[in-house]
Image (cartoon, rainbow, N blue to C red):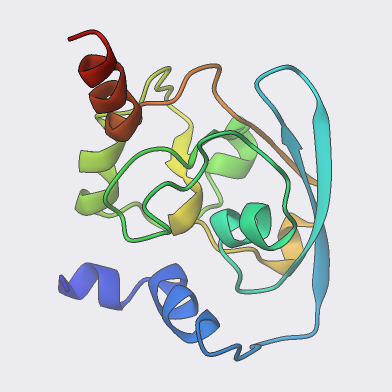
Length: 146
């Protein structure tokens, strides 16, 4: 695993979450605006990645987090408001590489698997892009058309 990923709070949280270890009891509210405009609200633990929030709360965002947070896809692509984006932890080169594959990329795009919830994010609203780049689906469509 690249050193920059080992230092990422989310990579660490994803690793320990498989063992049901909880870092903090503090909870914050996070709102996701789904592709159809529906507002999905969840409560999250400090230290959870936004991908974990979607999965753990069963928010039902189609195709979200296909690689389960291994930084091997861009299906957990989220769009942040500018002021929130500026306060997020630094983006890694590996995340930038995956974002290059995302549809609807903006200047305030991040991957949900790499953004960890902090108390200061209480009330955060993020936008799910209209389309998702999921190579698994493209391969399935290609097989069906043959």
